[in-house]
Image (tube, rainbow, N blue to C red; front, side, top):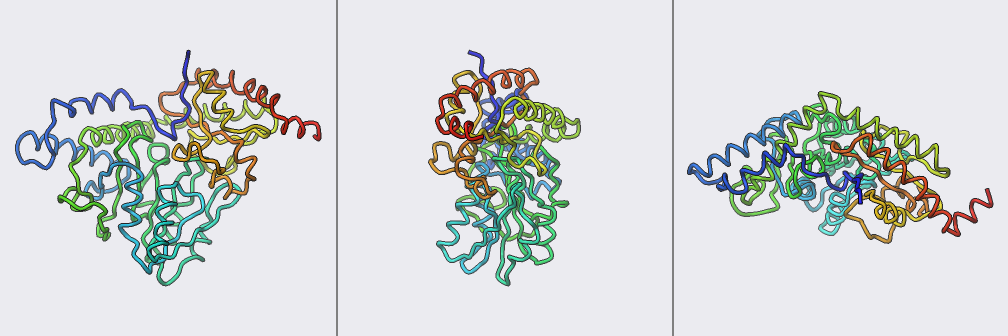
Length: 388
């Protein structure tokens, strides 16, 4: 059976160039990057080259990059590395679980957390961030691009609010890095998170940008790795892969690769909305990353549609992979004002560098008839259709 993968916000395939860059560091160049002999120094050099590549992607100094075991660890290091009992933290109602649950935990250890709402397009109002500030506000943590809708947040404006107040500003850019230009100086952030497997590097590696001079309490205690900010022997193959992926992402942004992906995404949206009634793009009125669309299909369960499409060879999702199987509707879509029924009827399509225009055609040949078939089996949709 032919299989097409449109769930790149969950994870991306490792690009061939990335895999080729990593392979020597599994066996041939195996040294511990903290060792002072030849084997260690050649892997240390590779780690530092990767650090330079990631820094170039983000517009910062190499020394400001801390390699981690992934985006969740980087988010947690940013939040727990700054906030202390008695501090006030501002976040939003649409954050990834890595931020949302970290903030929930802060409340159990004596921090105060304000969760700023979003509008119907899923955007945070920077004025509401400013209004939420208190004398003891220590940290603002707002994502750059939402993982379920692709909606971009006004992080540059939020960065100015944080700077004026003298507050640390962290942004989770896991779904933005490699898709839009990320310049930490322009954004005005103090801390910024990326994850390898969202940008065609391997799973299990990420990075945290830490602005020079920022005090950060480590979460892991051991050796003095990463300038004593993240203990543990470096995952050299993963770091090399992240570095190569960062190089490719930077080149792709310069060459307009994401414009081509946006054209494919827009074609898919237009045709689905033209051919399938009772549908709509969630967050379509806001700026979004070019690879993501979230579409609701009234009258059916999103998970039933995911399974039906998967049986025909098309992989999509109902939202965040870390929430797969959850009984509750998406907290992101509910925060945007969707009812529970419509939130459960939504599908996320997220494209990657490996996807082609021909694969878009394959997907479009499957989606309308599959939706129609599920609606034929849905007494809820039949009843609604008759009333219309």
